[in-house]
Length: 108
Length: 114
Image 1: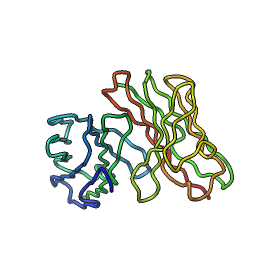
Image 2: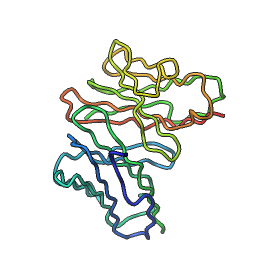
Image 3: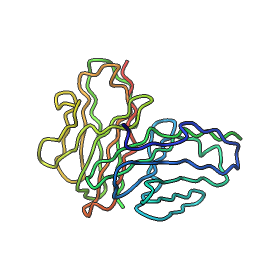
């Protein structure tokens, strides 16, 4: 059983579309991260959430602790947003559990 | 927030050789972790790097294959020993701050063993 489930696994969008990636988890957590993994493998942390909502540029992340669910939204998507987006949760210990990722392709 | 510099970003290695991956943090972090992502899989914890003592390994990972060092609070290395093609993966380090409120990630190392 995977503690973290992401959907969809793959997503193709036209440039300019609004994109939503979902993450559900089954454990109590102290924090949730959204990571971006580039085609070359490099990983960047986009957000850390423990409650509510955060916005950075065209990216918005929300979390509902009671429902154990988080969403990552991309507004006005662009081909450079093409990457794998990974949800990672941290229970009250220190290690992370990772989702399998959502592969996003934005077509010009 | 801390920044973790991970090197190398990628490498292609011959089977039977070893590769050491380094993570340097620009400030002190309490905990450091090493993860592996095999092709098509999610990231999996290899071990917790403990400062000044032996790392704590997860089930399925052993020190002889993945020796880890952490001489201080800002630096850690992971060695992939006696590599085989099955070791071809992305390896990632992460750390948590002293208050355990934030986590930071290296950029990852893409390893290909031929």
